[in-house]
Length: 115
Image (tube, rainbow, N blue to C red):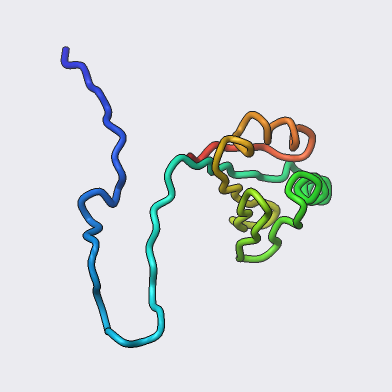
């Protein structure tokens, strides 16, 4: 039986070629940056716990979690609305990885690691 080994590669590895594209001499357009070594955790309120989740999120991040389709910047994470009473936590460095967040939201939310 063949053994498989996976090599971590960027999805942009062969698609992104550095250079100038599009109209010249106009205002800034679209910029693209790849984020590596990040955590992306989905936080979903448990039934009847939306208010408790909102309070726990503000305590943890220092900002209110988004309640409409938008992203909110905290000092060390970005909270991204993903549906009613749920949001994604995008962060670097492991501070907001699944394990630390599961303690912060133990009573109010279920978590799913999307990294």
